[in-house]
Image 1 (cartoon, one colour):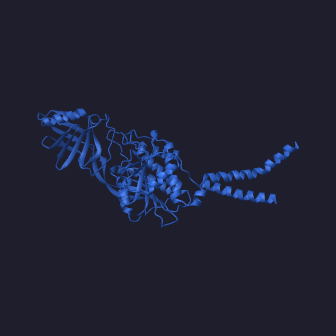
Image 2: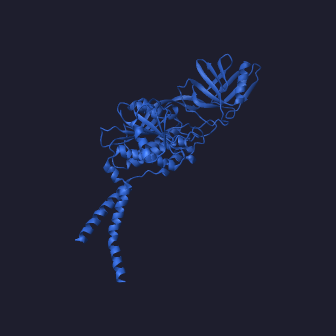
Image 3: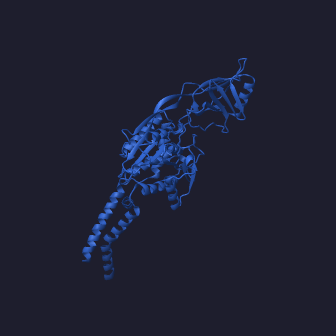
Length: 451
């Protein structure tokens, strides 16, 4: 009788163990090393800084599309790629120059990249001539000109190498902004007093072009539940006229790579209770244009959805930051409260900010409960030094720990959580091992007694 019970238990244990083993083998677990490798790829010279509107930016959109296809994610509508129009800067044929000329025909020229350089802010004009006859305002470290109803700014930078690049905002009140040294500033002030002429030519212009968000979906079981939307922007600031590439590893190849790895992991799990939508956003660096296009396009269809945006994931020695909208500072946010609770329960250090400086703001403005998850290290962003070398896998793992627990609590039922629990898998293996080893141990004991 005991032998029969033992055999039944062993068979059942074997079936359970094989089931869990098969399930475990089918899950494509999140791997922070994969995330870092994808960051390195997206931040490589091949994509030249992923400037929105560039062919390299389009190539990244194609890469993300193929990745979503590989993981067998569904299209939200009829296509993974959703196009929208933007005004985007492009490298023109101009040779950059800044010259001061007096009435005698004498001219003083300044060196591009050393004495002056365009700020990325706007390029509604790329060549202008100024004098004291224009509307001029001289400030302690800047000079503004108003001409033909356009506003232009020259300002002194504390950075000696002009490495910082602003986001491009085509509806900025400034037609262009130029960074200059203190010496150039002094020369310009003197020239205006002497009624000299200041001429500048910049190597960028603006054109209207179609760019793309990349969108996919994992179908949920219950269509009455509102979806969870996970987002990250993949664009950055491109390559300047000096050949410097703004790699944007932390900002935001990191968030995009985190989103891609999450899509791989979630696609291998059992079907979630609610739809999970993945959106690789474009034109964040142009003023959150991609997120605004998506949020306004789906504000009725996806009303009530919650949105987590990933922007700058993986900076070493920085706590997790939850960035919510300025308008929500004194209001309640379910998604913020849920994430704060998970952090507290798992001893994860976090900060909370209320700023509209990432894509969560577009979703909040369109009625969604949204926040950005970030390791908000701004020491290297928007410079050529934002490279993969400074990305920490430990920080990526901490971000995943938080998001995984949020997913399990908000997108999956109890049965799924039990089935994918690694502790249960280990227990089934130990029980199976004990049962099959029992006869061997028994024979060894008999042999010892005989000897």
